[in-house]
Structures are given as structure tokens and as C-alpha cells.
Image (cartoon, rainbow, N blue to C red; front, side):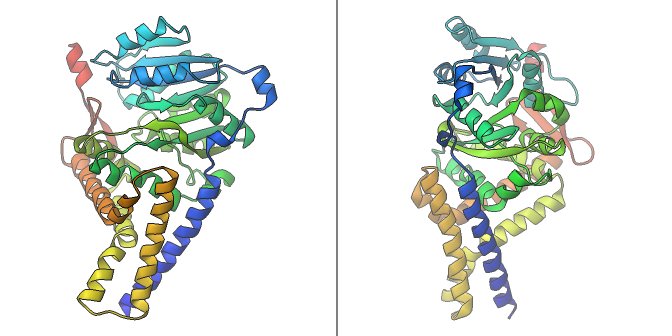
Length: 400
């Protein structure tokens, strides 16, 4: 009887998730669908494209070339070299000689109490001249309409800030099992209807790979200084927008912006470990999240073959279990088609959930008991309480 109640509970939960997913797919509009109004085309305001870059010699030329080819021409493109130890600054200088819109900014050492990306974005915002700020990561690739499309989406939807989700390129098996979970989690679990139409900061989301702010909004909310000690600066700054009474919405940029977040298993583990524990902030909350994600998205795949072939289950319980799996796979199929990922990978959903769960455990262990979580030569660990602080900065060592 308990098992049957469980099956009903999971089926109802997945039905609610499916309804939310359908609404989200409708609301998650592609920026390519929006065009700038005539008054903007006649007199386009200056947009500052702000790119924090730390050891990005493999990516920086690609993003800068793509920015110079934007169909929105009134841009300044500022790159902050965040104490890189590679050829990042040299590449930017060479490109700046060819296009006067590109400018290199040399970052200052990271102060106590700041996270690296927040301080880099803060420095860029202080010298930017535009009426609008675009913050985008150095490892993104932009098609010619990424700026105009996101700007049009902001204007047409009467919001103050937009965050645009790129198409995440996943090549290796480890990338495909983890990176795809980002869109799956956001579009399945976050109610975008409430993000758009409520004032509650709880219903906020965004992705640091692309943010567009009205300058005055960015300054009123305190900019990245207001979230200077946060690992998940993108989520927290989106909450700041709501706290100050402004509007934010997320959009689909899969046809306009590409990004490959990681290239191997080591980067996958380090990258996800960096922010999973930070997303929950305590062992209890992270444990509850892992438990429910596993219960809803993993256990149905285990119960069905176990019940049929070992315990000879029949009837309502099996039917509900099949419905659960069809809902999960249905969501994954839609996402695979929308973001052009490998359709056969949907059959590996249990492995994907297992990957995320194990990395979440690693994130907590490394943050709480290990050397800390590392990213781009900086290591963050827990020195007191549950917050993550900077414990090592290799760039400072290299400068000694």
C-alpha cells in the first residue's frame, strides 16, 4: 500500500512539473523572434559589452571577433584581463588595434571579501560609458543578432534586465550527462510565469553567460558589488533586481549564442562542484535537494524493471511507473529537439541524474572538508560557517 501511495505522489509531482514545463516552453522565447523598434534603429543608444577574462587565450579572440560582427553597431567592447598568466591581454591588444571599439582593461588584484568574477564585472562597470550593460563570458560565441535580439527582447517585453541562455555545447560523454541538466532543471522546476509576473526575489533566475541591464537599474541595485561575496553571482544579482522592484526575465538564446562550458571530466567536476554547494548553502538543504531530485527523476527508472522482473508487479503501480518515465523522457525529448542535443542521450537520464548527485556530494565534501572548490586558479573553501571564501589565488603567487 505504501508503494502505491508513493507511485501516486511521484506521478502527481511529475504531472505538475510537466504543466510547468509546458508553460515555461511557451514563455521561454527565442531572442531571434524580437526586432528593434524603428526609433532605436534611427538613434541607437550606446551599449557597453563587458567581458571578464581570466586565462582565456583559447577563447578571447573568438568572442571579440563575433562582437565586432554584430548587426548592432553602437557598441564599446571592454575586456578586463583578470590577472591572467597566459596570452589573454596580448591577444586583446592586437584585436584592439584593428577595431577601436575594443579596449583592454588591466584588472587589479582581488580584494578580500570579493569573488573573482564579481570584482572583474564591477571594475568594468565603473569605466563603461553605455546606457545599457551587457555582461558576457569570454567562452561564449555570438552570432550577429545576439545584442540586437536581447535588446529588442528587453524593450518589447518591458523589463529592466534580461538574462539569455546560450546553446550549451556538450561533446564528451561527461559533458552531455551534466551540462544538459542545466536547461532541464530550469525549465522543469523554475516557474518562469512567477519570475516574470511576481515581485518575490525567490522566483528569480539568470545565467552569468549573458546579462543585459539598463545602466540605471544596474547602478540602483548596487551592481555586482551588492553580491561581491557570492559564488552564484548570477542568481543573486537577479534577486537584487527583484528586491529593488525592477523586472527581469530569461530568454532562449540557443540560435544566437553558443557556449562550451567544459571540455573534460576534470573541468565538469570542478565547474559543477564550484556552484552546487553554493546554490544550497548548507548540508541539510543540499541533501534534501539531492533526495527529491533522485526520488522524482531517478527512482522511477530503477523501480520499473525491479518491480516487473524481480517482484512481478502488475496493475496500477506499474502503469503509474510507466507514466512517470514517459513524462520524464517526454520533457527530455522536447529539450533535445529545442537545443539540438543528442536525442539518444535521453535514454541515459538515470546516468545524468547520478552524475549530478555524485558531483553534488563532491561539492560539499570539497567545500567543507577538502582543499575547497577551484576555478581558474582560485580556490574557495569554508573557513567559518557555511559561506565559501577565497583560500588560494595562484595568480598572486605567480606575481610574487
